[in-house]
Length: 343
Ligand SMILES: [Zn+2]
Ligand SMILES: [Zn+2]
Image 1 (cartoon, rainbow, N blue to C red):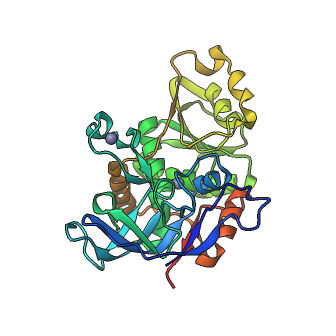
Image 2: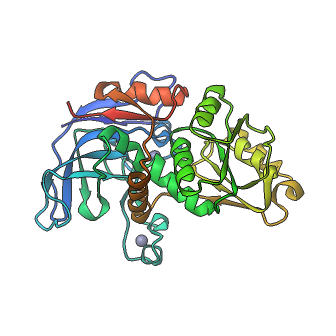
Image 3: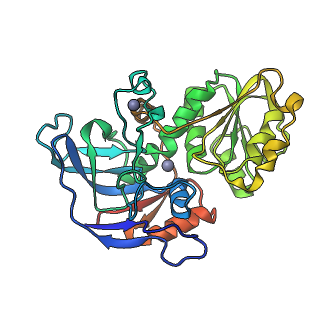
């Protein structure tokens, strides 16, 4: 099969071939695995971090991509949940130990043996993808493959962030940054908390307009003071300054949830300049979101179907994988980028 692979760490802006098109044996399922013929794979900011070495893949060359949807073409002999011809998908969770205290408590995202798709196992920038059947998901029928792919990371992890922020209806909710994940978070908040007001903070005037078009109550620049105090805020940026600037706008007891796999070090001093009395006093909280559980993905797919939450997508052909990643790095996107793989 053909696949795009990361062979070494490189700087996307300075390197011609930061991905390599490789040819490898088609995957063969073991007794409890399925093979998915990949029709579409979402492109995530995490791929940029993997290529540039801020998030380290377990091995090279590795096939990236963790928002995978397609059709089951082969099943292992003990597989019971899927049959050939089913539509199936997979997300960031490739496997976990299923035995430790976290796994038993439904916190498989915190398992020390958590394996991530496209980072610790080959992902979906490929014609075929292999995964244990219990970590694959059936797909809602009313969505196209391209619409489904971004639901598996941008959507499902965004949903986990909302659960951790735990707003109540009518409360004011902030979104810091407005990329692929945040635009799905906004749609989901509007469905689940119809009386809440959403406040979006982003430097990009076009994204502010996009947020208002999608129903945000207010959209402003980073550090701009919103017209109301916020009960919680969800940050999806890779940097420190924007989320920390929002702390002073939180109500007492308000919570900032950081939905980012890592933060760039360049504005680390923003953290040191936190003002305790203004930013944290009165029981304000900062909490991170790590990975995703199978339950998050299952619940989110169901909600997406119930409320018809579809991402705005830009589709790139398989050959244009590098362009699709570059466009995210250069912030030339509105919504989510998706690689279309099957011809
Ligand atoms: Zn992702
Ligand atoms: Zn575990």
